Image (cartoon, rainbow, N blue to C red; front, side, top):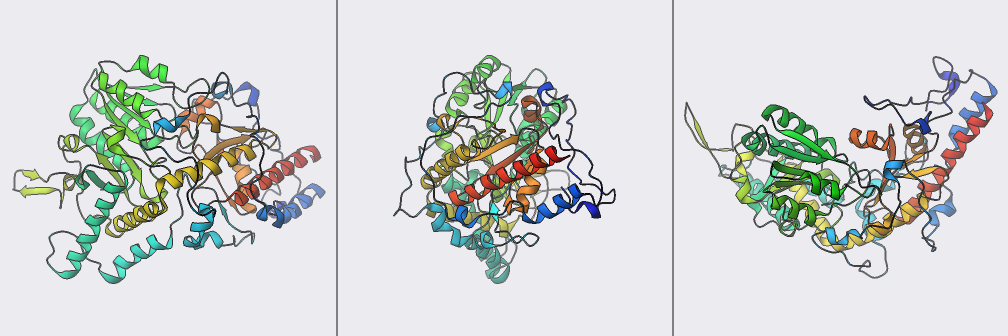
Length: 526
C-alpha cells in the first residue's frame, strides 16, 4: 500500500494485487480476497483522508505496551477452509512427538524468559526509521535475531585469528581450526549426535537436503522406487526430490493433511508406505501450520519397509529439545539463522553408517584423501562433503549460538514458547474475520500463526502492520502446494521466539484490529 495517493503516477492508492498461483483457481467462497481494490481519484477527499490516516494508523498505545498477560479461557477457533476445518475430537497432544519432553512450566525466579534475554538482542530496541514506531519482531520462523554473544564470536574470528582451517601449522591456522572443529562438537552435543563426525556443515538447510538428494539419492534411487513427501513441505524439502526423482526414474508421492488440519494424514501415510518406498522426507514442524510430526510413528512405519527417513528440523531444532539418537531418523537438516546464528551456515546430521555409504557431492580441496591424474580417493565423513574453504566464521558463530541456547535451556525455551504461542493464538482468534491455520493449542502447535483476514490480502495486512512497527511475513512462505491445498493465494504469519513478550503480542493484535478497521472504512466510503 503506497501513500500518499496524490503522489502516485496514476493518482491512485496502490494496493498489492492478489497473486494467482499456477493451478489455483480459487475457492468460490473467496471470490475476492480484497474488496477494496478500487482506484481513488487524486486529491479527492477519500485520497486525502487515506493519506492522513497513514500517518496516524496503528499507533501502539502505551497502555497496551504495559499490559500484562490477561487471564481467561481460550476463544473458539475461527472456521478455516474446509480442508483445514477443526472438526471432530481433538487429536492427541504432541508432547510425545519430541525426543525430550519439555517441563510444564518455565523454570526460574518469576522473571519471564523474554525479560531475561532481551538485553542480549539490542536490535529489539530500535525504532523503525520511516514511522518512528518501536520494532515488534514477529518474523522468527524466517530468521531469528542474533544475540551479542554470537555476534562477538563471529567478529572475533576476523579480528583475532583469521586463517584458513586444516593443514596449516602456524598459530592462527591452528587456532581457527580448533574453534571451527569445536563448533562442530557443540552442534553434535546440542542435538545429541553420537559423534561430531556426523555433523556436516552446509550453507543452509536447503543445501543439506540437496546434499542427501544428490549423493544418497542419485546413488540409490532407481525406477520403481518411491519417495514420499507431504503437501505441507517447504520447497527445500520438495524441489530437490522432484529433480532427483526425474533424474533417477523414481516416483515422487505426497501425503495430504489430516481432516482437522493438524499436520499430515497419518492414515494416508500408512496406506502409502510399502515395499517400494525408499525414502520418507517430512518436516518435523510445519512453518505454516505449526503442527508437529509424529516422528516415532513415521520411523516405525518406514523401518517396517526398509525405507530411510529424512527430517526437516528447521522449525524444531531452534525451539525444542531435539535428540537425534532418540528420534531414530537417518538424517536431519537445520539452518543457523533460525536458531540465533548467522546466515550462510546450516548443517546436515546423518547416521555415520549412512554417511559412509554416500559418495561425494562436490569435488575440490578438503574432501580428498589422495589425488592422482586419473582418479582420486575421498576422505571420511564429514570432510568428504565439505569441499573447499568453509564458512569458518559462520560455523564458529553457530557454535556460539548453540552455547547460548544451551545456557538458556531448551526445555525452558520450549515451555516458554508453548505458553506465549498459546497466548498469540488466543488473542489472534479474537479478531473478527481472522482464520488461523493449523491445530489448536490443545492439540499442540508451535509458536507461530499463519492467518488470513476475510476480504483482505495478506500483503496489504502486513504492509500496514509494518507501519505500526510490527514485522510479520506475507506470501506463500515457500509452501505453494500447501496454499493451493488450503485454497488460498497467500497468508500472513506471526512467529515468536524466546525474546518476544505478551505485550508485543498485544501490540500486534491491536494493530491488526486497526488495520482491519481501516480497510473496512475504505470499503464503506468508496
